[in-house]
Length: 193
Image (cartoon, rainbow, N blue to C red; front, side, top):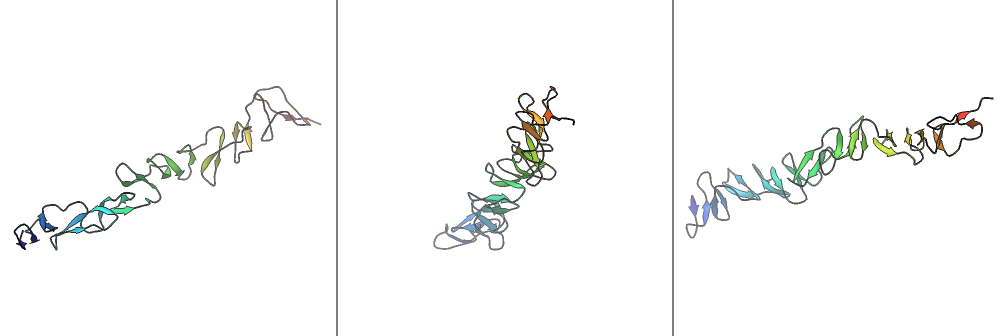
């Protein structure tokens, strides 16, 4: 103590490099406070900071349900970041993820020109899916299409064993005015008149 009241253990001020906290002089301020070098006191951090440095708002750790990003505690990490529960921080998504959850590589949306497929960003959608250029994700083709393009019902390929391919559709039989040349995959060809 540099000054005390009542008995020698109740400090009112501290010597250099010590800070006043609850009438005691501390070399380091306890959790939830920061060392103010001007007043030589441990002052409370502002919520949602759990720990802070330099001032009440420069956070180094956050209370529950908040995540540290650039020395701020946020309830929402914002675009391009995910809530890392392990260390309580907002962590950046790994490109080509535009948004991610649970880890930097589990994407919920992708940057252009990628498409979202099973929580990953891909250049091309897998067979059985088409690339939705508006929502930037891979959408499932209709059940009769083995592959499709631009929409779930615009088939580009059928299963080839039970269905016939004709004008971007997969059919059980060739329509009137067409025939099947008995080739694999099964297709329907217009009759010549």
